[in-house]
Image (cartoon, rainbow, N blue to C red):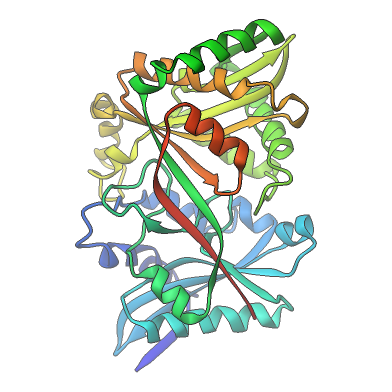
Length: 370
């Protein structure tokens, strides 16, 4: 017998948050999320709740906890896209189609009551957070802040009635190969000279201004992209807090033309290498591993590369990649992941192939009418 229960108590929320430890207990590539960060996502002060509503559910089979899901309405998304899309997120489930069906049925009913006509996901809780279902690339752990799931999830979604609506790509970059690329070096030098284009690292002493640049460029550069939701003031403050904790200044770069910031690249050290050893807990002593294990990290993740629309097609991205990978090598890093990239973003995909990037993980976003 399967029973779906709405999360209403602290005890139920704790069970909701801790379920992945059961689902992934035999998965050598899963990285336990930091429990402290997860709890913040379900606190009423979390930025998402300014623009959306969410309800969380648990699934029990014969009184055993076997699944979870969130029903999500993102008002800002529907305003931005003039749409009536509802979302599901935080999906975790044993390999049981009946359990998955009942979880998804619960979300479908919740969304329908709100007059929404499509169900889309997984988005936990939006495309600015954990987005997509891994469908290729299960033989390696996820990189910093990227999702991970069992191979059978895509089958649960497709059998329920979902179709893929977009592919998200993760590229692997070998640092030494990138810097051996003569075309990249030549183009990078030419672009700098032609446009008086200069690159500088983030100023950690003026984070408020710098994070403001990130928000401005993100909201302008991604405005017409699939799934785009603009960053709010509160959301950017959360990013500012996170940047303070884990930023490596030489990996967060701004590009200027005649003193105006026209683009940026934001990359992070792959602290998932460290999180893997922490079992979700920073305290009492695990936070020390953020320092003692830092030298073991040999990956970075390129999270954002944005250029203002009026400055695109000038080759500025080549300068960003060249400077970023050069700085990464100086830190002792060997590899980079650029993720996620929309499969239909011809300009970004072409640019990553120019720097010898190879697609090594693929994620799908699913959708169905309701």
